[in-house]
Image 1: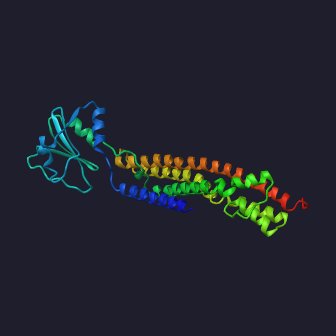
Image 2: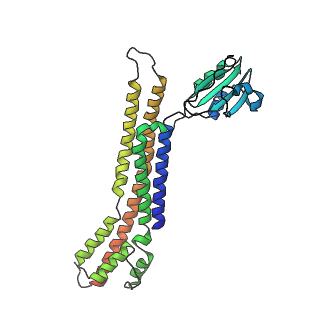
Image 3: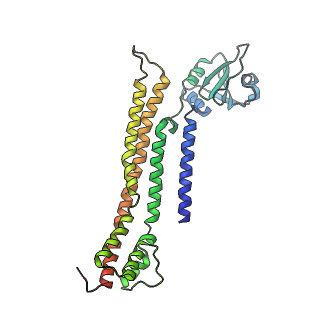
Length: 317
């Protein structure tokens, strides 16, 4: 049990860290240098990684910062920097260096063949990430926590050792009464203890058995809530994203702020995907656990009837 409590605490801590990282990531876009290089290769624009000391002038606008890479292309050389939000480069008084920013990336370059490279750099978009879920990361994260915790707890609690141990099944098959070494650790042992020690009536013993069976379903209603709520949260996020998109369309026509469009569409798509991604495994887990509970319940029913026959052989209904 201690190991399970430690596991539960670890799952909760990991989820809190996950939500915190998503929240911090939502305050600024993150584009990697590799995304830019891959976009250049996709456009058949060649570039070669070189030593930074070959083009020291490309580093002058960013003193004290190491570049993510310095590259040499056809009649154009450039350096890429990954810098925190709010950074301001130094001004090139000679205007020989072109400096551009896209989210967290800065590019400094020089050459006569810069237009195509700069266009690709400016068109880079932050890849879809969970940070684009916005506020919905919190309720969906809570759904993930509930689904993982309930599933793990029930799988642990429904083990045969905690419900219907092999020694109980073996004793029933051989017609033996429970001995003094049996404890009250499992559902079956508790039913046996009540039948032997408390001498209940037949109806009382069956009622207690039903209580033990009902306890096997503890917490499963939370999985049912997750199965129903996660897709609805995804749908709500989809509607919210679409409203965000359409509300930014200018009244007189036109395109408007394209970044708002991309953020709204990303939210609309991601919330639906994540909502379904949470609901589908939760539904599978719920179905599996219900099947396992049915199996355990049948065993406990068999135990109860055998005990009734053994303890009160003359009191059949």
